[in-house]
Length: 128
Image (cartoon, rainbow, N blue to C red):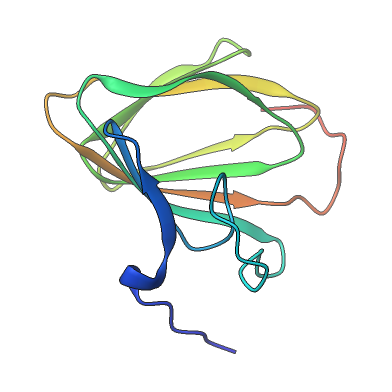
């Protein structure tokens, strides 16, 4: 079934450097009617200011997809991966048993991304 969720009805927070809208309960936004949809756990609509980003932080047992809508995002993780994903491209990370990563907007302009988290059907796989 399709449920229409107007942008203005989404939860979220503006932290100055990060303006985030959450399609499902996430961080300080909690709505028991919007916890997930099947294995889809997170769909965040993020705007990240130039020269800012998420410092290294851990994840486990989650498939994390970043779709860059405008600008670019730079990624580093504890497996030694480094990269830059530009508008129109997708980055996928399998957190597996545990990984630390950071994402930064090193661009001179605002970067807009969709960050999507999917709960894996199997747990305990190696991160990648």
